[in-house]
Length: 96
Length: 81
Image (cartoon, rainbow over all chains, first blue to last red; front, side, top):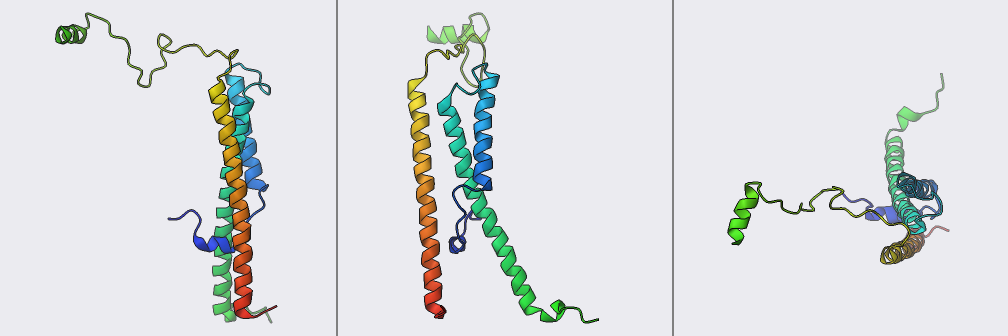
């Protein structure tokens, strides 16, 4: 199973800074800070390269996960609207 | 002579240095020295981060271009506005 099928490229791509990339980037940065804390180093000042690398990794993973989530949602929406289009009788506004 | 030494080790009469497979024994591991930065590691981390950001931004721009291209092609086919 492909992570991002070709038809997902027909969807508008999410902005670079989106909920997923922001949150996972923050989580990556937090894990670098926690690594500092557990190894008894200064929490914010130590291992800047580690903080940057883990935050970057989080942003990359978050961006691709959001792309996949948007694709799955769009696919479900398309199937839903197709179903509604094929069964109009079930979706009339109630007259009673 | 080597075979004899191997046999003696197997019988537990001569200590062999511990192998490093999945061991964190304090006899084998050096204590981390945070006062002297691991400069190659730092360079590798920053370099990898730069590469990852470049790849991410490039991927995003390609996605935007591909989306615009497909949108234009769809409009051209259906001859709508």
